[in-house]
Length: 233
Image 1 (cartoon, rainbow, N blue to C red):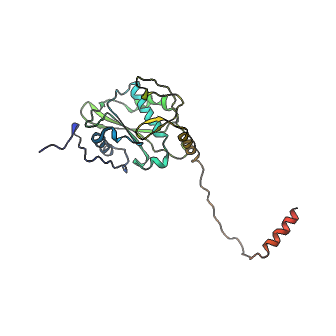
Image 2: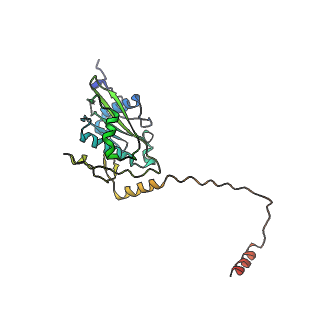
Image 3: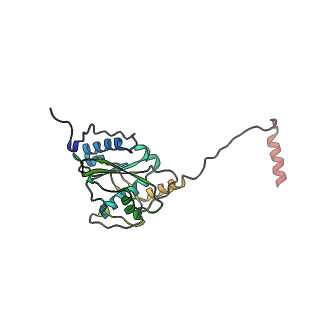
């Protein structure tokens, strides 16, 4: 009888991914990993990005992660909320049919230190997750927080020029998530982010109406208004 498990002991149960889950914790992240192993790059969407094995700590890997986080932070809240409760997920060390992972030993604080020059001091927090594949390798997850109305526009703070122009970052540029990639924002998308920034910080108006004293019927309203107009003139 054939073993249903695929490479690296992962069993792709279905090509459908339940995006109603919160992508935090090993159980949820393993389900995402199995989905990516099953479909590869086809899994990429506005809320999910996939990278093969990277040399963690390198300038290229840091720039790739920073670009994803910037794009995820510049999503529209009502659109982001449709999947993963608004979270955005980057999976590193996986490809269709296998999950070779990256070398174990990547420390969260070291990754954050490398990312901060690109993200700036006001960037929202993000999470790191790990799913082990063998004694030396693990798949890494970078999880971006859900965007909120009132969030500022998050621009790139540092330039990067790599061998692959798709990895390049420009200081001051605004990046957004496309259907399956992170790219510079178009004019309409920048305007939408401006509206997002204006959408928070304004408490709703609370209006209460009550009757104080007696209620009287007022007659000859039109005549009284004419008298008042004449008086004002």
